[in-house]
Amino acid sequence: MAIVNKFAPGAPCWFELGTTDQEAAKRFYGGLLGWSAQDDPMGPGQFYTMFKLDGHYAGAAYTLEPKMREQGVPAHWMVYFAVKSVDESAAKVSELGGKLEQPPFDVMDAGRMALCQDPGGAPFCLWQGKANPGVGVIRQDNAVCWAELVTRDTAKVRTFYTALFGWETKGSANMPTYIEFSVDGEPSGGLLPMDENWKDIPSHWGIYFHAADCDAAVEKAKQLGATVRFGPFSAPGVGRLASLADPQGAGFSLITFAQSGGRA
Image (tube, rainbow, N blue to C red; front, side, top):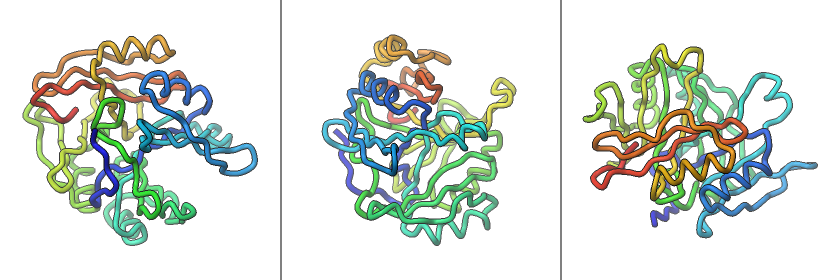
């Protein structure tokens, strides 16, 4: 089990689901991944769900506000990246060609965050952990194991994130156009170029959950109401993977790494 209690700057550290049906999301991810749910009050009639796997935080969920839905924001998973200082990193976002959507603010004693957008239009969050450094479990069965940016300009966003987070990046040996990034030598995610097949889908971050058996997990997800977008299929040197959407439409992927793998 990969238990963690701190994250290097630039590492994906928190994964948050914005959904249209929080109760249904708890049932779905609980059934698929064995997650338990802890609901923390946010305000009148609102709560923030902290997902746990074997007693360790694995992610979170909240209900999208009516205003967000009116603006066309779909159900989605958001990726947070660890930083030493949210204020300093947020100040660099615009300088590097990104956009600061929401300036830094405190989340009680848990930490300090900011909502940003990269030069390709993909939203992401900065997180300066205090009481909560991030998820407590990662890169194991039923936990997030990989973060992936789907984008139309890998060169531009590669430059942006490398300057912002100090990532180490390289091309993939199995897919020449795919860019992998590592943090302190730990492979953590990748940049996937979009082609005409993506049509008008905007650039976005996504997450992979590791499954002991990808095919079996896909079947379970289907029984729980998920839609399979593509797969399962085998990627040489990587593993077996599939892309899905939960019953509310939030996309995610499942992967079973090849024995010599370690990335999606």
